[in-house]
Amino acid sequence: MISIELYFDHFGLLKRCRADGHAGAGYKGNDIVCAAVSVLLRTTYRTLLKKADIRLWEDASKRGTFFLEAEATEESTAAFLFAVGSFLKEGLQSVSEDYPQFCTVKIYMEE
Image (cartoon, rainbow, N blue to C red):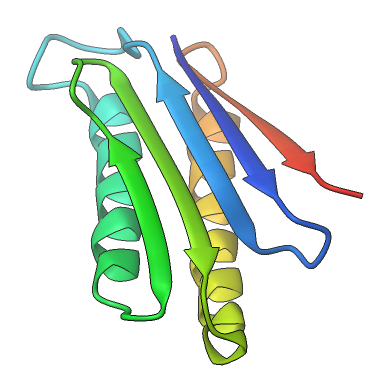
């Protein structure tokens, strides 16, 4: 089971993402749930990494774990961070809805 936690600030900007575990929906290298989650997380990270005014912290040093923290350092990049976070949230929720026995997503919003 992959457990994912997404944290957003009160404006809806992505703050943190944490994913832990293995889906177990298929053999290593042939797991559609793991592949979908991995592509969404990696694409989010690579997209944010290319934006100069977003500060990032990332850790994927252990198999089956991923951590990302993002901060817009300029007001002009807030909309970009909002859009990328919304895309990630929708994608991960879609995977979780299609494969609830292999992936869960919890959303936390700051007040």
